[in-house]
Image (cartoon, rainbow, N blue to C red; front, side):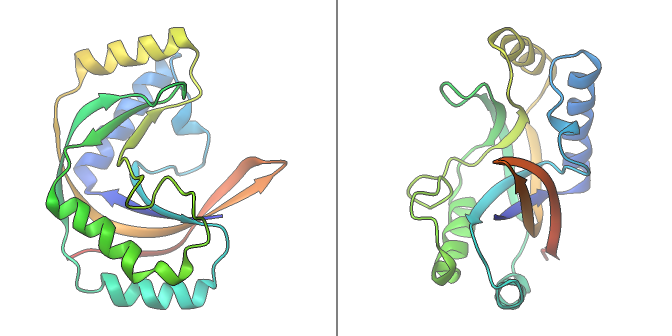
Length: 182
């Protein structure tokens, strides 16, 4: 499986990584340690199978002249029955256009018609913690709501990642291609 992820500016990335670290130190969440070199991000799209070479060529073409996207991560939330805590950006025309343009440009690759990342279903978010018990979800929410401020961030890079699975469980993630935005 593949994902296209929007990565943040260095300051935002460090802020979220420090938050992950505190959640680990307080035995609340180990999300940051589940994958080696996990980066805070917003997922833009997912694909089951890709011709990597062709996709990278198209990615390079689309994102060569794309500008960074300014966002405000000011919503702390959880999907119902997910045991996941996330921060989400305030929706802006710029962010929605960025997402929509990706899907228009790459529609020939869409092999997942029920994807949660399609424009009609997408809820942009950056995961803070997941697979939490109800007690830990409340703890994580309380900590974050009391210690976080609105994060003025930039989407500064777009990456294609490949997720490897064994027995329906993720066993590794690698970056296949990455492009800095202008």
